[in-house]
Amino acid sequence: ILGTGVGGGIVINKQLLSGPNAICGEWGHNPLPWINTKDKPGRTCYCGKQDCIETFLSGPGFASSYSGQSAEPNTFLSSEQIWQAARQGDTLASEHCDLYIEQLAKALSSVINILDPACIVLGGGLSNIDEIYEKTAARLGNYVFSDSVNTPIKKAKYGDSSGVRGAAWL
Ligand SMILES: [Zn+2]
Image 1 (cartoon, protein in one colour):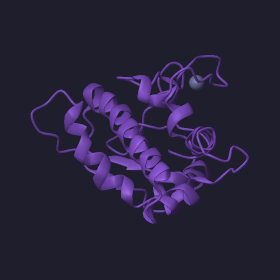
Image 2 (cartoon, rainbow, N blue to C red):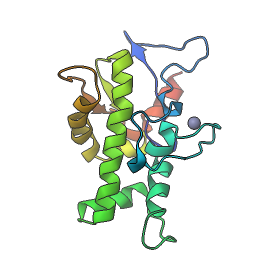
Image 3 (cartoon, protein in one colour):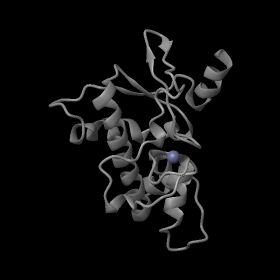
């Protein structure tokens, strides 16, 4: 889930894994892997740690780090507006979206290195951004410990309503 927060679940043979701490798949509060100065580290997460994946890949994380570098600091664009600006050729927005793809590729690669799932399904508001699928998949090879990466990244069947559907099922 790439939404207000970043979370996840792991399903094997149609069974949701839970684990003794009921946090199975909770990748959003691991630190962003392969972090460097371009990522502008030093972000404090509400969980008390620093540079959690969620502080980079959530909608609020993505949008707030953009407004922090905008020429007009009082301008706060939504994630969708930033992607729209990038599509229209805005250089700053394009760089910010490119950084997002890179960070998403790094974060998903660490999941693949541990779990090597048959498929990764993205949900949440940012999963509506069509550009992220192919572009992120193309960069996994820079980080995954394998000569070739065959992991499909797919959009959730029910879009950003998939999480609430899952909750209703439970
Ligand atoms: Zn955190």
